[in-house]
Structures are given as C-alpha cells and as structure tokens.
Figure 1: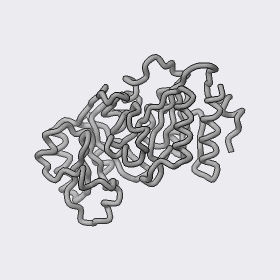
Figure 2 (figure 1 turned 180 degrees about the horizontal axis):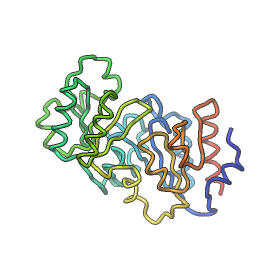
Figure 3 (figure 1 turned 90 degrees about the vertical axis):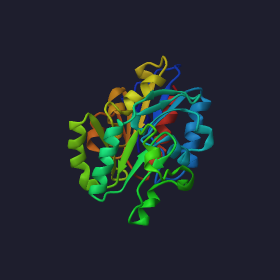
Figure 4 (figure 1 turned 120 degrees about the vertical axis):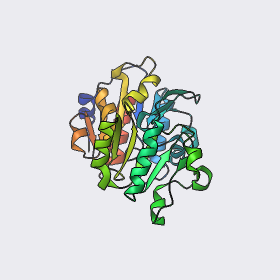
Length: 275
C-alpha cells in the first residue's frame, strides 16, 4: 500500500492551484473492455467537483471511447488514436494526423498476404475484412452494425487514423516497415496487439493543444502501457499502473496490479486534491 508521505515526496503538489489530470483508459481506469467502474467514475467526478481539469488520452477512437465511458464524460477534452486526433470539449478538432492513403492500402495488402486480421479506423467508423474466426470479434465493441463500413473504397475516401493489427508475429516486420516509411508502431501489451499510425503520433503531442496555461508541475499523468511512454516522460508528475520496466524507469509513482490497486489510486487522487 502506498503511503501519503511517499506520494507527497515523489510528486510535486502545489497548494491552491488548478490542476490537470490526464488519464489513459485501458489498463489504467478501464479494464477488460468494460464500462468505467463506479469506483473510478466517482474518483473522476470528485476531480471535476473540486474544479480541476480532466483530459483523456487513449489509443481508442472516439466511437470506442464512448463504449466504455459514461455519457457525462463524452464531451471532455481528449486525444484519440494515441495522439493522432485531438478534440476539445466543444467537439472541435485541434489536431489531426491521418495515415497517408498509399500506406493504408499497402499495409492492408501486407496483412491480407499474411492472413492477419486487422481493423482500419477513421473518426467514427471502422472497416475489417471478414475474419476466419468469429471469436476475434469479441475484441470489437458491441456496436458493429452501426459503425462498421463494409465497402473498403468508401472507407478509403475518409481520413484513416490507425490500423490495428492482431498478429504479433508481424510486429518486427511492421516495425521495420514503419521505420522505412516514416510511420510509428504502438504496442499494446494489455491486449497483445499493435497500431500503425502516421509519424509524430503520440499522446504527449496529442494533449499539447489542450493544456491552456497549466504549468507542468500542475499536470498529473496516469498510464500503463507502451503508447503512454512519451506522455509519461514528458511531464514531471507521472503515475504508472502495472510493471512495464521501461515505464517504471521514467515514472514517479507506481500502482501495482494487486488487491490494493483501487485504494492506491484513490489515495493518490485524494492527496493531490487535498493540497
């Protein structure tokens, strides 16, 4: 169990200042593709009630974000697709970095060649080829009928923000491909999948248009996975869930996945809010 003294020692908590809390979703405040728990919902609401800012930073699309977040959080500032698309609380797009069309088509063909399942995401919809195994559809949200596009040509007329690849055997191949073509690959250890996106897409760059006049000392980052690396490294007050060594090296506090997880998370938030 984390001690209050440790929190105060490792985080910079300025008294009487408005603070900004930035949350990753999966593996941080959302688990197993299920709706935000009542406990975490109450924690987020408490932050808002104290007059502080919340920004969400997720690898999900806005469509997928709404699947796991209650309606009262749908209009909060957020960056989606691991920083490729950012919108403010009025729904205005503040950052948009889509994948070049030529690469989308090439990546699709590579996946099909290797018989690897993939999902292509734009702002509101997605496309995937018919899978050989229906069980793989369990990873997708429950609104497939409403948001799935069956016509790939129609999908390619829109801005594509990421391609999610399910075959980890292709990870090294696509890392080399991305390096040669000025793209980035984001590994999700929580689901053992990876995204392919345009260069300079990361959550740190994604949240910058939303930070207003917050100083770095008044910004608190909560993440758990490799696609959180840049944002955890970019701010002083970083808290990591789980045990990924690379993230533990750059974070100030760690919340292990154990029986104390919810209590530790709540204690950190309460300690910051009490300043």
